[in-house]
Image (cartoon, rainbow, N blue to C red; front, side, top):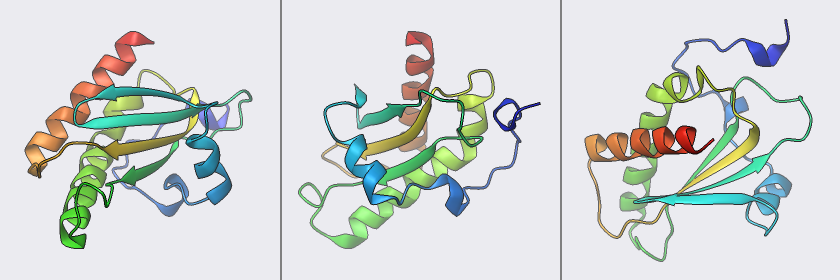
Length: 133
């Protein structure tokens, strides 16, 4: 059984699932990546041609400084996005192994949202994305 075929139900977000490689991040935002929009998020992802993926894609959470000048607002939103993703990542991927290797979730909303609003929006965005595949 391949490493890709088994998804565990752990609700962790280890360092191996967080995107930090600058080369992959640059590639993610170049024109060869795919993207879709679901308010208040914009998703960028790289499709993997081979089968050398980890259990889950590496993910990057971004809150732009241009929209939220105060660092504590950016940290607040980023922590809420990470938590919503961490709690629901198994639900997002359990019936559909992701064909992408890197995923960036950019918060493009103009106002601060609380955790429940962010969680609901992220769940709806992934549900719509799964339907489109």
